[in-house]
Image (cartoon, rainbow, N blue to C red; front, side, top):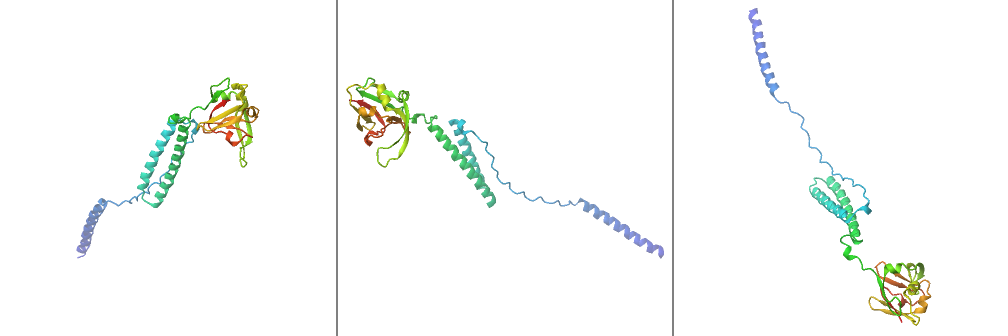
Amino acid sequence: MCKRDLLVPSGILLILALVLVACGGAASNTPVPTNTVGPTDTPRPTSTPVPTVDTASLTVDDLQATVAALETELEAARTSASGASGEGEESDYDVIIDGIERKLEAAQALMQAAMGEGGEAGEDEMPPAATLTLSGDFEQAREWSWAELEELEILTAIVAGPRDDDSEAEYTGVSLSAFLDAAGVGEEAETLIAIAADDFSAEIDLAAAQNCAECMIVLDDEGVLRLIMPDFPSKNWIVDVVSLEAQ
C-alpha cells in the first residue's frame, strides 16, 4: 500500500512537468508586443537666412533673377501654408510669407530704380539732352548743348523767388552774364527774348541781364532748362526755356 501511494504522486508530477514544458514552449513562440512609436510632431517651417548683398553692385539681370527666385519661394510657402495641419503651424507660415513678401517688394523696387536710371528697359525713357538755341544779334547764333554751357562760369546762389510769398532756395547753374559774353551780343541789341517749349515768351532788358550777378541758367530735375532771374518779374523766370533771341 505504501509503495502504491508513493507512485501515484510521482506520475502526477511527471504529467504536470510535461504540461508545463509544452505550455512554456508555446509561450516562448508568442511574440512580445513592442512599444508602439508615437507619431512625430510635424517640423515647424524655418526661414533660410538671406546673405547680405551689396545692392549697388547688382545689375538689372541680377535683380530680375532675384525677383523671380523670391516669387517662386513665395508660391512654395503659400502652398505649404495651405496644407498646414494646425493653428501653430499656420502662424509660423504667416511669418515666413510676410518676410518673403517684404524681400520681394524691396527687390522689385531696386529693379525698377535700376531700370529707370539707364538700365536695359529704361534706356528709351531717358530724356533728350537739354539744348538752348540762340538767334538774332549774336555772334554765336546757334544751338548750345548743356555740356557746352557747363564749360562756362558756374555759380551757386541763394535767392528768393519773384513773388512776395516765395521763400529762398539755393540754385546752381551757368552764369547768364557769362553765357551772353560767350555768345557775343551785338552792340545794337537791347532786348533779350526768352521763349519756352510751350511758345510762351517774355522780354528781358538785355543790359540788366548782362549786369545781373546771380542770374543763371539751370538744368532742373526734369531735365529742362530754367532761367533763375532774381530781382526780375516772375514772367522772366521761364521754365523749359528753349531759345533766346537778341534784338
